[in-house]
Image (cartoon, rainbow, N blue to C red):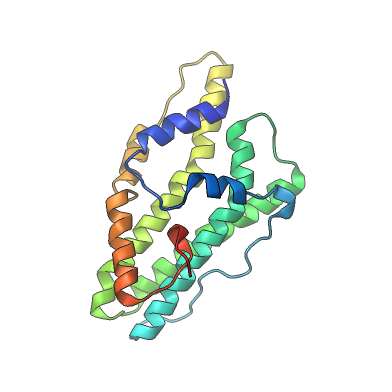
Length: 202
């Protein structure tokens, strides 16, 4: 059975999640793996134990979310191949995808560290935590699905009943859902933070 079938099965479980992107538009924009350019910018900061002003807080959120969007778009062609199961990634594609995955993790870790080790304006403290939790959980779902689907396929090929870690999936859907995304977008609108994340126009 094709992995893509399982992918859609899991997506049904995650039906509480919502995205603004138009599905047809997203499909039209998907590049081939050869055309993918690895994003050159992710969120970084060496600041520790500092008081961050509002302008820097806004720029930090924008940089983090823009990087998230660019990395997600860059990973899509590789994930499509992995989910489809008809083809496998060649050595060059694997190296490229591995670099994108590592940058995604670094982007999440860097922003989380910056937020936790510095003092942001009071109005930003709860919302930056919400943003960090949401994006990190979203990436864990996105990149974790490939490992889950691979394990399911291996089990079926060996005649075993596949085991799906529904608990981990449900745990992340408590963070990644339409309600949480709306709260984030409302905050972005309120503070005038322009980002390409969530299919928003800059």
